[in-house]
Image (cartoon, rainbow, N blue to C red; front, top):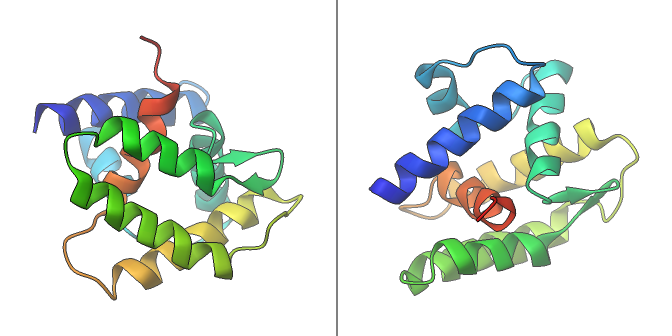
Length: 140
């Protein structure tokens, strides 16, 4: 529980940075962590910014290897969660373009696949997926 709180706070700061310093409420963070497909360009670009901050998107490429490595760090004591994240990444690797110069659209594609897959399995949240990405890039 504490770990999830820490990552929510890191996410809050990252979202704030991605919104040019605009304060972010806990409700906005909660909404961001839900497995939802971004509705418009602004939302896709916000997701892209967060993904880039945590190295899930690098130069227009989705990096599932880094996303999994992050999950392994965050959930080292929870192998079942790491396995679920691996399943999502394996599944989404087939449905997400390997490169898209429009990183906002790439983020939208990632979220579409994640939502589709998460809806097909129990007990997985977007926060778990994103928290893994955040931990790998957090300063020690």
